[in-house]
Amino acid sequence: MHSQSYLKKNIALAWPLALNALLMQSMLMIDTLLVSPLGEISLAAMGIATTIVAFILGIQMALANGTQLVLSRAVGSGDSTSLSKAFWSGLLINSSVALLFWGLLTAFDTALIQLLTQNVALYTEIEAYIAISKYIVLFTAITQVMIALFNGLSKSKIPFKGYLIELPINALLSYVFIHGYQLGAVITLPAMGVQGAALGSIIAIAVRLIYLYAVIRRSPTITLHIPEDRTMMQRNIKGHAIEIFPIAANVVILSIGATIYQLLYSQLDISAYVAITLIMPWIIAGSQFFAAWSHASAITISQAIGSQKMQGLVKNVNTSIDITVVISILCAVFFALISLLIADIYPDLTPSTYQALAVIAPIYIILPIIRGYNTVHGHILRALGKTTAVFKINFTGQWLISIPICAFLILGLDASIFWAFAVQPFEEFVKALPFRRLARRSLASFDLQKTAQFQHD
Picture 1 (cartoon, rainbow, N blue to C red):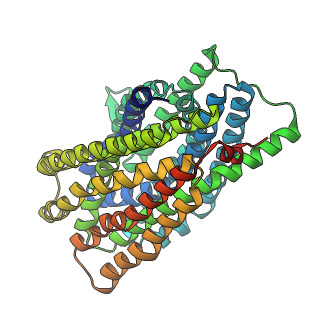
Picture 2 (picture 1 turned 45 degrees about the horizontal axis):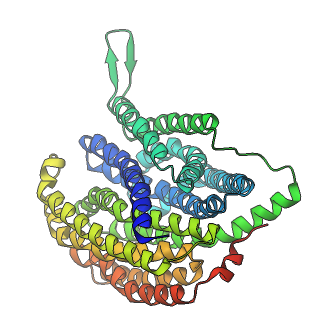
Picture 3 (picture 1 turned 180 degrees about the vertical axis):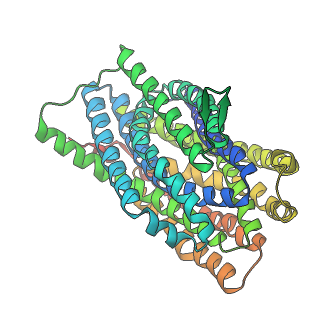
């Protein structure tokens, strides 16, 4: 694939992916804005509860991202049967994992909450939020695989339209359910607090699911036959799982690490923790731009592997890395602007919370530059089948180096929010050089013979 056509294809793929992810993160920010008038206890409770749910959704998204690579190769090969098998295998795997986590949340929610926080005042609100939001896991299992299908087909605009439908529904219903609503003497909806945010999200996600299903049913170019050969399908599911579970494990360790960071930050004073809770959705949202470009690069490379047309692979990868650096710098500028407007965005916080937000501003401004560099390397390497090596780099940088340092700073030295939060860009610096070296070695040795490892039948 020529560099110019690669660039055009990636741009066409990436901008809907970026807006998809941005809208998805916007729903959490909207819920946070709507809950913020309820006070810092409700904000802290929502921060802990969404950390639990986000961890599970991260696993589901990781599985779907792995399925997305399989679907992209099937699209590249032009084999509709392979596409059908990849879709149904991915859906079965992701739905099974969703049911497992839903059961765990149902059975052990109270024990988990007590493990995560000792603040009794938060228990009731966290439990109320999880009681409803756990159903999001079931809907997301299906929608993520559908989104992976559209992305693999280079139809990323369709999921984007789905989020455009979901977002206003979520915002409106969440507002009504959180604060209550009364229409004359006939209709009265009681205020549900943080529980209302979860209910609004579930209804909106259900609407998006219906939309994606309708598009698949109406599309003449998408035919998803259920394979009749059970033995062949079982073999396909096994091969599919062997490929995507390492990808999921790679993302899971990062998700668990992010959760542990949040739990460590919860040991800071409440103003510091609330500051981090408020800024993290913005950091994640801004990061979606370079993450989307990285996803698009992985999809395009996977399609090329499926078609066995990989001319200019090294040049295209270098182009992806260069553009990611530019996007990351733009994200840093965006975060700098957010830091100047934070008091206008959240006008009802305490002075100590504003002070904490000001202290960590230089850190979250610089963070996307190095994180974007690592993100594009990780996605490209997964498309090339180097998931285990990526796992080792992430595990070493996060679990063996950065998290122990963060724990020591907070629990051992009682460090300030600045030093505790500064561990996150430090982690990215630790991983940058190994990622670069691995990418160069992998590209130098990759050839068509290695595509045999991607066959599941």
